[in-house]
Length: 139
Image (tube, rainbow, N blue to C red; front, side):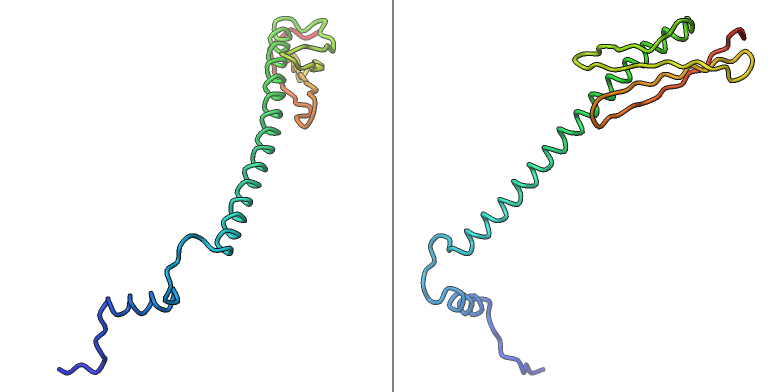
């Protein structure tokens, strides 16, 4: 079988590409386009990290407020389940946060008391509500 295509060795291709791409001169260092592209890619990465840091800080603040709300509601629910009489709206200090807690009690049906605790937080966490029911003697 005869071969119609010319045989090209790997060394011939490399030598040809080297002469075309290098322009028959030795390249040392980086050119201006490479530096501009590298600085642009680095800048976009830094902006992304900065944006993620700001969002993470905001979400951590919301989580801290919600955690304080949960602690306050748990304490008030424990008191309400033990004795549901005389629970008035109050302001609680949980850590460095001031939270307003209100407690509403309603009779769902005879013998079943529903205790609803609402905690008003600060900032984007807003207010949250917890509900507990207990068997009790009707009034």
